[in-house]
Image 1 (cartoon, rainbow, N blue to C red):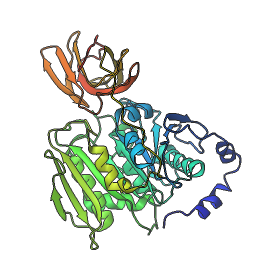
Image 2: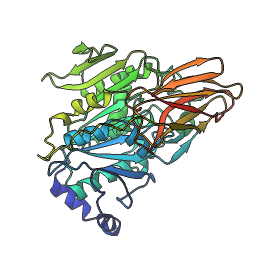
Image 3: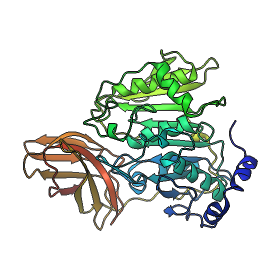
Length: 427
Protein backbone atom coordinates (compact mmCIF):
# COMPACT_ATOMS: atom_id res chain seq x y z
CA UNK A 1 0.00 0.00 0.00
CA UNK A 2 1.27 3.46 -0.83
CA UNK A 3 2.40 5.62 2.02
CA UNK A 4 -0.14 7.92 3.62
CA UNK A 5 0.65 11.36 4.94
CA UNK A 6 0.05 10.11 8.50
CA UNK A 7 2.60 7.36 8.09
CA UNK A 8 5.04 9.78 6.50
CA UNK A 9 4.67 12.19 9.41
CA UNK A 10 5.37 9.38 11.88
CA UNK A 11 8.56 8.46 10.06
CA UNK A 12 9.68 12.06 9.82
CA UNK A 13 9.27 12.58 13.54
CA UNK A 14 12.15 10.18 14.16
CA UNK A 15 14.68 11.85 11.87
CA UNK A 16 15.79 14.35 14.56
CA UNK A 17 17.97 17.30 13.71
CA UNK A 18 18.94 16.40 10.14
CA UNK A 19 15.39 16.46 8.87
CA UNK A 20 14.42 19.36 11.10
CA UNK A 21 17.19 21.42 9.53
CA UNK A 22 16.19 20.30 6.01
CA UNK A 23 12.57 21.29 6.60
CA UNK A 24 13.72 24.85 7.20
CA UNK A 25 15.22 25.07 3.72
CA UNK A 26 13.13 27.45 1.58
CA UNK A 27 11.15 26.00 -1.33
CA UNK A 28 12.60 26.58 -4.78
CA UNK A 29 11.13 29.49 -6.68
CA UNK A 30 8.32 28.52 -9.02
CA UNK A 31 8.84 28.32 -12.79
CA UNK A 32 12.62 28.25 -12.57
CA UNK A 33 15.17 25.57 -11.91
CA UNK A 34 16.57 25.93 -8.40
CA UNK A 35 19.16 23.94 -6.49
CA UNK A 36 18.06 22.51 -3.14
CA UNK A 37 20.63 21.75 -0.45
CA UNK A 38 19.99 20.05 2.86
CA UNK A 39 17.02 18.11 1.49
CA UNK A 40 17.59 15.22 3.92
CA UNK A 41 19.63 12.04 4.18
CA UNK A 42 22.06 11.99 1.25
CA UNK A 43 24.37 8.96 1.46
CA UNK A 44 25.04 9.11 -2.28
CA UNK A 45 26.25 12.72 -2.13
CA UNK A 46 23.88 13.72 -4.96
CA UNK A 47 22.98 17.27 -5.91
CA UNK A 48 19.31 18.19 -6.26
CA UNK A 49 17.68 20.66 -8.64
CA UNK A 50 13.95 21.26 -8.62
CA UNK A 51 11.47 22.61 -11.16
CA UNK A 52 8.13 23.77 -9.74
CA UNK A 53 5.64 25.04 -12.35
CA UNK A 54 3.73 28.25 -11.70
CA UNK A 55 0.38 26.48 -11.95
CA UNK A 56 -0.13 23.20 -10.13
CA UNK A 57 -2.78 21.45 -8.03
CA UNK A 58 -2.76 21.43 -4.22
CA UNK A 59 -1.22 17.94 -4.21
CA UNK A 60 0.97 17.81 -7.33
CA UNK A 61 2.47 14.67 -8.77
CA UNK A 62 6.25 14.29 -8.59
CA UNK A 63 8.58 13.14 -11.38
CA UNK A 64 12.25 12.29 -10.80
CA UNK A 65 14.25 12.72 -14.05
CA UNK A 66 17.86 11.50 -14.19
CA UNK A 67 20.69 12.16 -16.64
CA UNK A 68 23.20 9.80 -18.22
CA UNK A 69 26.90 9.40 -17.42
CA UNK A 70 28.82 12.65 -17.72
CA UNK A 71 25.65 14.71 -17.51
CA UNK A 72 23.94 16.76 -14.84
CA UNK A 73 20.53 17.59 -13.51
CA UNK A 74 20.73 21.05 -15.05
CA UNK A 75 21.74 19.54 -18.38
CA UNK A 76 18.86 17.05 -18.35
CA UNK A 77 16.49 19.91 -17.48
CA UNK A 78 17.58 21.93 -20.52
CA UNK A 79 18.05 18.94 -22.81
CA UNK A 80 14.72 17.14 -22.32
CA UNK A 81 11.03 17.99 -22.58
CA UNK A 82 9.93 17.14 -19.03
CA UNK A 83 9.92 20.72 -17.67
CA UNK A 84 7.74 21.93 -20.56
CA UNK A 85 5.33 19.06 -19.89
CA UNK A 86 5.35 19.97 -16.19
CA UNK A 87 4.19 23.46 -17.12
CA UNK A 88 1.39 21.94 -19.16
CA UNK A 89 0.20 19.35 -16.63
CA UNK A 90 1.20 20.81 -13.26
CA UNK A 91 3.63 18.21 -11.86
CA UNK A 92 6.93 18.91 -10.09
CA UNK A 93 10.22 17.63 -11.54
CA UNK A 94 13.25 16.61 -9.46
CA UNK A 95 16.57 16.59 -11.34
CA UNK A 96 19.31 14.76 -9.37
CA UNK A 97 22.98 15.05 -10.35
CA UNK A 98 25.23 12.00 -9.88
CA UNK A 99 28.65 12.48 -8.31
CA UNK A 100 30.12 8.95 -8.52
CA UNK A 101 33.13 9.14 -10.84
CA UNK A 102 33.76 6.26 -13.25
CA UNK A 103 35.61 5.79 -16.52
CA UNK A 104 32.40 7.04 -18.16
CA UNK A 105 32.30 10.23 -16.08
CA UNK A 106 29.90 10.87 -13.22
CA UNK A 107 27.28 8.12 -13.17
CA UNK A 108 24.48 6.98 -10.87
CA UNK A 109 25.53 4.05 -8.69
CA UNK A 110 23.92 0.78 -9.82
CA UNK A 111 26.85 -1.52 -9.10
CA UNK A 112 27.58 -1.36 -5.35
CA UNK A 113 25.97 -3.62 -2.77
CA UNK A 114 24.41 -0.53 -1.17
CA UNK A 115 22.72 0.43 -4.44
CA UNK A 116 21.09 -3.01 -4.63
CA UNK A 117 19.79 -3.05 -1.05
CA UNK A 118 16.67 -1.28 0.19
CA UNK A 119 17.78 1.21 2.80
CA UNK A 120 21.40 0.32 2.00
CA UNK A 121 22.34 3.89 1.22
CA UNK A 122 24.09 5.26 -1.85
CA UNK A 123 22.23 7.00 -4.68
CA UNK A 124 18.81 5.28 -4.43
CA UNK A 125 18.38 6.38 -0.81
CA UNK A 126 19.37 9.94 -1.74
CA UNK A 127 16.74 10.08 -4.49
CA UNK A 128 14.05 8.90 -2.06
CA UNK A 129 15.09 11.72 0.30
CA UNK A 130 14.51 14.17 -2.53
CA UNK A 131 11.02 12.81 -3.08
CA UNK A 132 10.23 13.12 0.62
CA UNK A 133 11.48 16.72 0.58
CA UNK A 134 9.02 17.60 -2.20
CA UNK A 135 6.21 15.87 -0.34
CA UNK A 136 6.96 17.93 2.77
CA UNK A 137 7.63 21.29 1.18
CA UNK A 138 5.10 21.30 -1.67
CA UNK A 139 2.41 18.84 -0.56
CA UNK A 140 3.48 16.37 -3.25
CA UNK A 141 1.11 13.45 -3.68
CA UNK A 142 2.82 10.29 -2.33
CA UNK A 143 0.54 8.14 -4.49
CA UNK A 144 1.69 9.85 -7.71
CA UNK A 145 5.48 9.68 -7.66
CA UNK A 146 7.18 8.65 -10.90
CA UNK A 147 10.75 8.22 -12.11
CA UNK A 148 12.53 8.30 -15.45
CA UNK A 149 16.09 8.45 -16.69
CA UNK A 150 18.42 8.12 -19.66
CA UNK A 151 21.28 5.59 -19.83
CA UNK A 152 22.84 5.72 -16.33
CA UNK A 153 19.66 7.46 -15.17
CA UNK A 154 17.58 4.73 -16.79
CA UNK A 155 19.60 2.08 -14.99
CA UNK A 156 18.98 3.91 -11.73
CA UNK A 157 15.27 4.05 -12.58
CA UNK A 158 15.15 0.24 -12.68
CA UNK A 159 16.95 0.13 -9.33
CA UNK A 160 14.51 2.53 -7.69
CA UNK A 161 11.49 0.61 -9.00
CA UNK A 162 12.93 -2.61 -7.57
CA UNK A 163 14.05 -1.21 -4.21
CA UNK A 164 11.20 1.19 -3.47
CA UNK A 165 7.98 -0.16 -5.02
CA UNK A 166 6.06 1.57 -2.22
CA UNK A 167 7.46 4.97 -3.24
CA UNK A 168 7.11 4.97 -7.05
CA UNK A 169 3.89 4.36 -8.97
CA UNK A 170 5.60 3.85 -12.36
CA UNK A 171 8.85 4.39 -14.22
CA UNK A 172 10.07 5.01 -17.75
CA UNK A 173 13.54 3.67 -18.57
CA UNK A 174 15.53 5.00 -21.54
CA UNK A 175 18.49 2.84 -22.63
CA UNK A 176 18.75 1.01 -19.33
CA UNK A 177 19.85 -2.41 -18.13
CA UNK A 178 18.04 -4.84 -15.81
CA UNK A 179 18.34 -4.37 -12.06
CA UNK A 180 21.51 -6.15 -10.76
CA UNK A 181 22.99 -6.44 -14.27
CA UNK A 182 26.33 -5.02 -13.04
CA UNK A 183 28.17 -7.34 -10.68
CA UNK A 184 30.32 -4.62 -9.09
CA UNK A 185 32.17 -1.40 -9.89
CA UNK A 186 34.79 -3.22 -11.96
CA UNK A 187 31.98 -4.56 -14.15
CA UNK A 188 30.68 -1.07 -14.99
CA UNK A 189 33.15 0.26 -17.64
CA UNK A 190 32.11 -0.92 -21.11
CA UNK A 191 35.37 -2.59 -22.14
CA UNK A 192 35.28 -5.08 -19.26
CA UNK A 193 31.60 -5.37 -18.42
CA UNK A 194 29.75 -8.67 -18.65
CA UNK A 195 26.54 -6.67 -18.42
CA UNK A 196 26.99 -4.56 -21.54
CA UNK A 197 29.28 -6.73 -23.67
CA UNK A 198 26.30 -8.01 -25.63
CA UNK A 199 26.25 -11.48 -24.09
CA UNK A 200 24.17 -11.03 -20.92
CA UNK A 201 21.40 -13.64 -20.93
CA UNK A 202 19.68 -14.73 -17.72
CA UNK A 203 16.36 -16.46 -17.34
CA UNK A 204 13.23 -14.41 -16.60
CA UNK A 205 12.98 -16.21 -13.24
CA UNK A 206 16.55 -15.22 -12.32
CA UNK A 207 15.95 -11.58 -13.27
CA UNK A 208 12.65 -11.53 -11.40
CA UNK A 209 14.23 -13.07 -8.31
CA UNK A 210 16.70 -10.17 -8.20
CA UNK A 211 13.82 -7.70 -7.93
CA UNK A 212 11.97 -9.75 -5.33
CA UNK A 213 15.15 -10.07 -3.24
CA UNK A 214 15.57 -6.28 -3.20
CA UNK A 215 12.63 -5.92 -0.79
CA UNK A 216 12.09 -9.32 0.87
CA UNK A 217 8.57 -9.96 2.01
CA UNK A 218 7.03 -7.08 0.05
CA UNK A 219 3.55 -8.03 -1.14
CA UNK A 220 2.11 -4.67 -2.19
CA UNK A 221 1.52 -3.35 -5.70
CA UNK A 222 4.48 -3.05 -8.06
CA UNK A 223 5.14 0.07 -10.17
CA UNK A 224 4.29 -0.18 -13.85
CA UNK A 225 7.31 -0.05 -16.17
CA UNK A 226 7.91 1.49 -19.59
CA UNK A 227 11.15 0.54 -21.39
CA UNK A 228 12.80 2.33 -24.34
CA UNK A 229 15.79 1.37 -26.47
CA UNK A 230 17.31 2.26 -29.84
CA UNK A 231 17.73 -0.65 -32.23
CA UNK A 232 21.21 0.57 -33.23
CA UNK A 233 22.50 1.24 -29.70
CA UNK A 234 26.02 -0.18 -29.40
CA UNK A 235 27.02 1.43 -26.10
CA UNK A 236 24.20 -0.26 -24.15
CA UNK A 237 23.29 -3.10 -26.52
CA UNK A 238 19.72 -3.30 -27.78
CA UNK A 239 19.60 -6.94 -26.65
CA UNK A 240 19.34 -5.73 -23.05
CA UNK A 241 15.84 -4.40 -23.75
CA UNK A 242 14.66 -8.01 -23.95
CA UNK A 243 16.40 -8.82 -20.67
CA UNK A 244 14.56 -5.91 -19.03
CA UNK A 245 11.26 -7.14 -20.47
CA UNK A 246 11.93 -10.60 -19.08
CA UNK A 247 12.73 -9.19 -15.65
CA UNK A 248 9.61 -7.07 -15.25
CA UNK A 249 7.13 -9.42 -16.90
CA UNK A 250 8.36 -12.14 -14.55
CA UNK A 251 7.91 -9.83 -11.55
CA UNK A 252 4.29 -9.25 -12.62
CA UNK A 253 3.70 -12.91 -13.48
CA UNK A 254 2.97 -12.06 -17.12
CA UNK A 255 3.55 -13.96 -20.34
CA UNK A 256 6.66 -13.18 -22.37
CA UNK A 257 4.35 -12.66 -25.35
CA UNK A 258 2.94 -9.13 -25.67
CA UNK A 259 -0.78 -8.56 -25.34
CA UNK A 260 -0.73 -5.96 -28.12
CA UNK A 261 1.79 -4.43 -30.51
CA UNK A 262 1.44 -1.05 -32.21
CA UNK A 263 3.40 1.90 -33.61
CA UNK A 264 2.92 5.24 -31.84
CA UNK A 265 5.16 6.68 -34.59
CA UNK A 266 6.33 5.12 -37.82
CA UNK A 267 9.77 4.22 -36.44
CA UNK A 268 8.61 3.24 -32.92
CA UNK A 269 7.28 -0.25 -32.15
CA UNK A 270 5.51 -0.64 -28.82
CA UNK A 271 4.84 -4.02 -27.21
CA UNK A 272 2.41 -4.02 -24.31
CA UNK A 273 2.05 -6.64 -21.60
CA UNK A 274 -1.27 -6.49 -19.74
CA UNK A 275 -2.62 -8.40 -16.77
CA UNK A 276 -5.94 -10.25 -16.60
CA UNK A 277 -7.80 -6.99 -15.90
CA UNK A 278 -6.39 -5.42 -19.05
CA UNK A 279 -4.06 -3.05 -17.19
CA UNK A 280 -0.74 -2.60 -19.01
CA UNK A 281 1.97 -3.38 -16.48
CA UNK A 282 4.97 -3.40 -18.82
CA UNK A 283 5.51 -1.85 -22.22
CA UNK A 284 8.64 -1.89 -24.36
CA UNK A 285 9.26 0.60 -27.16
CA UNK A 286 11.90 0.11 -29.85
CA UNK A 287 13.12 3.21 -31.69
CA UNK A 288 14.25 1.76 -35.01
CA UNK A 289 17.47 3.27 -36.35
CA UNK A 290 18.27 5.11 -33.12
CA UNK A 291 21.57 4.69 -31.35
CA UNK A 292 22.43 5.70 -27.81
CA UNK A 293 20.37 8.86 -28.27
CA UNK A 294 17.18 8.69 -26.18
CA UNK A 295 14.93 10.37 -25.28
CA UNK A 296 14.25 12.02 -28.61
CA UNK A 297 11.44 14.40 -29.47
CA UNK A 298 7.99 13.17 -28.39
CA UNK A 299 9.29 10.36 -26.19
CA UNK A 300 8.94 12.31 -22.96
CA UNK A 301 5.30 12.98 -23.77
CA UNK A 302 4.65 9.27 -24.32
CA UNK A 303 6.28 8.58 -20.95
CA UNK A 304 4.09 11.21 -19.27
CA UNK A 305 1.03 9.63 -20.89
CA UNK A 306 2.11 6.21 -19.62
CA UNK A 307 2.22 7.68 -16.11
CA UNK A 308 -1.22 9.21 -16.58
CA UNK A 309 0.11 12.70 -15.88
CA UNK A 310 -1.48 14.08 -19.04
CA UNK A 311 -4.81 13.73 -17.25
CA UNK A 312 -3.68 15.93 -14.36
CA UNK A 313 -5.48 19.14 -13.48
CA UNK A 314 -2.83 21.88 -13.55
CA UNK A 315 -4.77 23.79 -10.93
CA UNK A 316 -7.00 26.12 -12.88
CA UNK A 317 -4.39 28.80 -13.45
CA UNK A 318 -3.65 30.55 -16.68
CA UNK A 319 -1.10 29.48 -19.24
CA UNK A 320 1.29 32.22 -20.32
CA UNK A 321 0.62 33.27 -23.92
CA UNK A 322 2.91 31.92 -26.58
CA UNK A 323 5.45 34.39 -27.84
CA UNK A 324 7.31 34.46 -31.11
CA UNK A 325 10.96 33.60 -30.48
CA UNK A 326 13.51 36.16 -31.51
CA UNK A 327 15.39 35.50 -34.73
CA UNK A 328 18.36 33.21 -34.59
CA UNK A 329 21.87 34.56 -34.15
CA UNK A 330 25.42 33.34 -33.76
CA UNK A 331 26.49 30.44 -31.57
CA UNK A 332 29.55 28.72 -30.18
CA UNK A 333 30.25 25.15 -29.08
CA UNK A 334 32.92 23.30 -27.12
CA UNK A 335 33.84 19.63 -26.73
CA UNK A 336 34.45 18.27 -23.23
CA UNK A 337 36.04 14.89 -22.45
CA UNK A 338 33.90 13.36 -19.69
CA UNK A 339 35.26 9.81 -19.69
CA UNK A 340 38.39 8.07 -20.93
CA UNK A 341 38.89 4.31 -20.58
CA UNK A 342 41.96 3.88 -22.79
CA UNK A 343 40.44 2.11 -25.77
CA UNK A 344 37.79 4.80 -26.12
CA UNK A 345 36.45 7.97 -24.60
CA UNK A 346 33.23 9.92 -24.19
CA UNK A 347 32.80 13.53 -25.24
CA UNK A 348 29.96 15.96 -24.52
CA UNK A 349 29.36 19.04 -26.64
CA UNK A 350 27.99 22.23 -25.07
CA UNK A 351 26.24 24.71 -27.38
CA UNK A 352 25.85 28.39 -26.44
CA UNK A 353 23.52 30.85 -28.19
CA UNK A 354 24.78 34.33 -28.98
CA UNK A 355 22.80 37.54 -28.69
CA UNK A 356 19.77 35.93 -30.31
CA UNK A 357 17.94 32.70 -29.53
CA UNK A 358 18.62 29.54 -31.52
CA UNK A 359 15.99 27.37 -33.10
CA UNK A 360 18.56 24.88 -34.34
CA UNK A 361 22.29 24.41 -34.92
CA UNK A 362 24.89 22.67 -37.08
CA UNK A 363 28.33 21.87 -35.67
CA UNK A 364 31.44 21.07 -37.69
CA UNK A 365 34.97 20.16 -36.71
CA UNK A 366 38.05 18.39 -38.02
CA UNK A 367 39.79 15.79 -35.87
CA UNK A 368 43.42 16.72 -35.05
CA UNK A 369 44.59 13.20 -35.85
CA UNK A 370 43.66 9.54 -35.36
CA UNK A 371 40.15 10.04 -33.94
CA UNK A 372 36.77 8.77 -35.16
CA UNK A 373 33.23 8.39 -33.84
CA UNK A 374 32.17 5.00 -32.50
CA UNK A 375 28.62 6.09 -31.57
CA UNK A 376 26.64 9.26 -31.02
CA UNK A 377 23.39 10.48 -29.47
CA UNK A 378 21.15 13.55 -29.63
CA UNK A 379 22.36 14.65 -33.07
CA UNK A 380 22.21 13.72 -36.77
CA UNK A 381 25.86 13.05 -37.53
CA UNK A 382 27.78 12.58 -40.76
CA UNK A 383 31.53 12.07 -41.18
CA UNK A 384 33.69 12.65 -44.23
CA UNK A 385 37.31 11.74 -43.66
CA UNK A 386 38.39 13.60 -40.53
CA UNK A 387 35.53 16.13 -40.72
CA UNK A 388 32.45 15.68 -38.53
CA UNK A 389 29.12 17.45 -39.03
CA UNK A 390 26.32 17.24 -36.44
CA UNK A 391 22.83 18.74 -36.53
CA UNK A 392 20.32 19.02 -33.69
CA UNK A 393 17.41 16.58 -33.57
CA UNK A 394 14.69 19.15 -32.92
CA UNK A 395 14.05 19.15 -29.20
CA UNK A 396 17.64 20.15 -28.38
CA UNK A 397 17.91 22.86 -31.03
CA UNK A 398 16.14 25.65 -29.15
CA UNK A 399 18.47 27.63 -26.88
CA UNK A 400 17.62 31.01 -25.35
CA UNK A 401 19.82 34.00 -26.13
CA UNK A 402 23.03 33.92 -24.14
CA UNK A 403 22.23 30.51 -22.65
CA UNK A 404 24.17 27.23 -22.87
CA UNK A 405 22.66 23.81 -23.46
CA UNK A 406 25.06 21.58 -21.54
CA UNK A 407 25.70 18.21 -23.22
CA UNK A 408 23.55 19.23 -26.19
CA UNK A 409 24.84 16.08 -27.79
CA UNK A 410 27.37 13.42 -26.94
CA UNK A 411 29.46 10.70 -28.50
CA UNK A 412 31.87 7.88 -27.89
CA UNK A 413 35.15 8.34 -29.75
CA UNK A 414 38.00 6.04 -30.66
CA UNK A 415 41.64 6.99 -30.81
CA UNK A 416 43.25 9.48 -28.44
CA UNK A 417 40.88 11.85 -26.65
CA UNK A 418 40.73 15.28 -28.28
CA UNK A 419 39.02 18.65 -27.91
CA UNK A 420 38.77 19.95 -31.50
CA UNK A 421 37.77 23.49 -32.38
CA UNK A 422 34.06 23.54 -33.27
CA UNK A 423 32.32 25.77 -35.76
CA UNK A 424 28.67 26.44 -34.82
CA UNK A 425 26.19 27.59 -37.45
CA UNK A 426 22.60 28.56 -36.51
CA UNK A 427 19.83 26.73 -38.39
